Image (cartoon, rainbow over all chains, first blue to last red):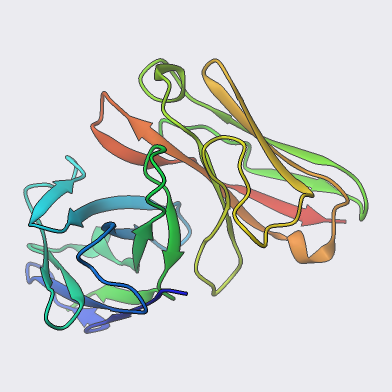
Length: 120
Length: 111
């Protein structure tokens, strides 16, 4: 069964760039769609964007101007960069894999999530 | 605010049946995009419960079932157990937003 694990700083200063990594085991990032999803404290889930092998990406338009998702296939990792962060970007960030079944994209495997706080 | 609306909370006694609605519009559920459901326990990663409107992944008990009609979808939990206390989210795609969207979330309480 695929496993995903997020890593990165738990504290980021306002106006700086939030950078997270997701390490994937028991699957290859050369298949499937790989997404980032976040949940601000006390709020619901928000899809940030995905990466598909070959470099194809798709971002939530609400975050598109600040988001970059990339991958390192040699390390079987993918990454999230979110620039110009504010307190509103404080959230638990999850990486997730799509089910790959032809239905509208769904997320069948998730990391445990990592809390990122934006504060000076 | 999400384009998929769910009731903030539902509750039921052990053994009872509860239904969680997910109301969308013509740009998401009504446009034919599939609806998926997730169970989110505190401190854990969300778990896919229902995919493709009605299908259960391997290992999900048949006490959980999903349906879709028009611009809405529903998750039904039968034989309610204490372990079902969690937040539940529907998810689909919205063509107006050009984004995958989650519902507002529903907290299930077992009385």
